Image (cartoon, rainbow, N blue to C red; front, side, top):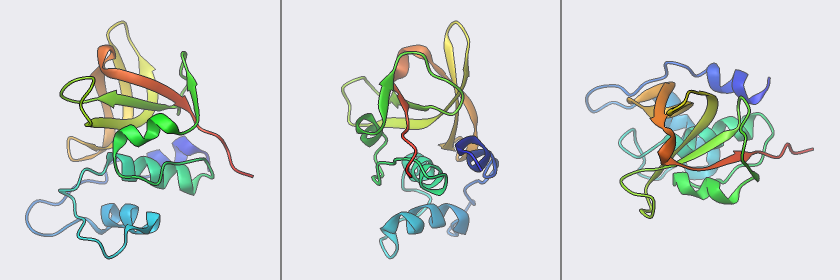
Length: 142
């Protein structure tokens, strides 16, 4: 399966209200080697999701849980294609906070991103183009 097929296979995976965690979300952390740490759905999991998808599909991945770690992965590009990685800033452009997901499409003012931890689930969400830090083309292994 390609990167988008794997990402879309997770569409709708969502956090569980209350004290229980969705074990599918926990598996994103575990399969990246974060097993046994005190991680749960309250931990930002957008980067864990993108890492999990990239690893499953045989592409380069950051292995880190912060969204901006994706700024060091793959090749920087100006014109993204379906399935490329989008790195966005949160709060302000120089903050350490960010968001990461897969490029779906764009309009004059928005980028549509398939990602995890968007409204507490895997879904497609629009973000203002002004929040884009960088587009990345991942490198296939093997």
